[in-house]
Image (cartoon, rainbow, N blue to C red; front, side):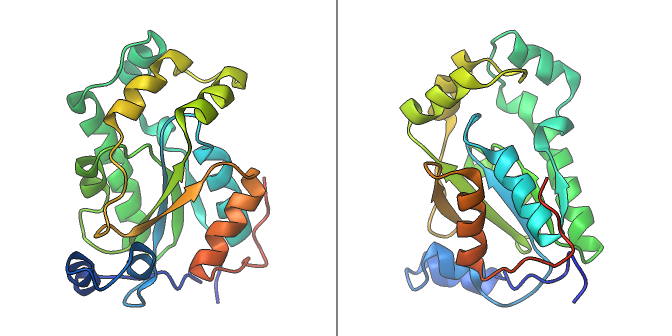
Length: 210
């Protein structure tokens, strides 16, 4: 099967309704076989390892990859670099760009991986506006763990001082949302493999790790 079109991660509105009734757990919802292709959205606060894990996944699977931070308008980057949290109004144009990237992949029948903090359910609803083809992978860690990572990170526009505001905004995945939660404790390569194992994904044979 061609690289980028080998996923078996599927779900749909029927699965969402079942989850709301308590008959399906989030992993079942995320892996329900109804339609393909799929875009995995690596979500979580800054410093959770989204970019590293997403790049590993995309490389192993041979899927399209986008760094969500690269889609921010310059005004957002400047605001965060100055230590000011983004408002919902600041984020909406960015989320629209993320959703457009997702839509393009799905419209072309391609699988993909994109990073996006997707902190609130309302943000995830924008990304998953078509109601199918999107699965969220929440990289979860304690404030202490993430803070220690941010202290060692250099060259990113968002200062570590803003981590508290991100945790304040964070709304974890609900049972009726298509997605899974993964602990950020292990090494990035181990986390990438855990994600692949949960979804039954295998290397494409053509993908290369960065």
